[in-house]
Length: 265
Image 1 (cartoon, one colour):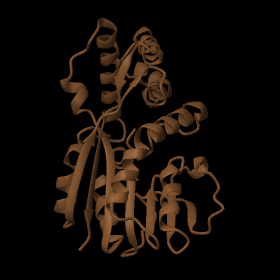
Image 2 (image 1 turned 90 degrees about the horizontal axis):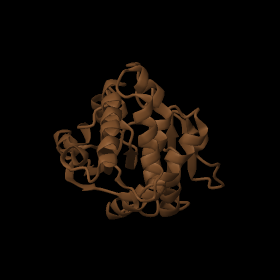
Image 3 (image 1 turned 90 degrees about the vertical axis):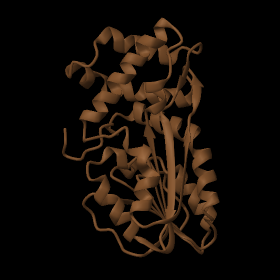
């Protein structure tokens, strides 16, 4: 599948809600810390790209207050709760094809969006152009450097790791998803002429069944049949991996989240 559609189908409601809840619990605290460090404050005009369940968009709306405004967009915005705030707008928007205004935003943030887009390079250029002078672009995405370099701690962990590697391979084949894209984010932002470029990598570990770990479980449940059809895994191995992720005795890491930012001069 190379038509630009998002691999995780949001029509699968239960798994989507589990995935969003786990991502919020695991990632929102660090995202808020990074954005605070960029100086988000009263009066800023912000765009949250691929807003998911809207948690960061709501956080931004609280930060910028009624003198600012936040646009929260997604290709499927139904999971973003309705807001009573006049300065928080929710809209359907596909950043690969829909118009993007130029030189408008003090902050543009996208988390776990660009790695799913074959057109990610072109999209990055458009996002930079949408910043006003002095505005910040903050991009966050997963990479799998840690999983490839760490040692399994038990036979069950080793079997799970094989299934997780098959998931990474499936994503790499789907929509040109790149697990290595995120490792170059600071260099990419610098190459686009942004100043004050910085970045960090962060690992989150959790027990089986925790909200963070259920992000991976939800992913396997959503695309498992497709992985089997592609010959990447069999049903027994997939079911065992899902059971491993639900076992409180298991300790599992999410992929490393690379967060990078830069300022338009």
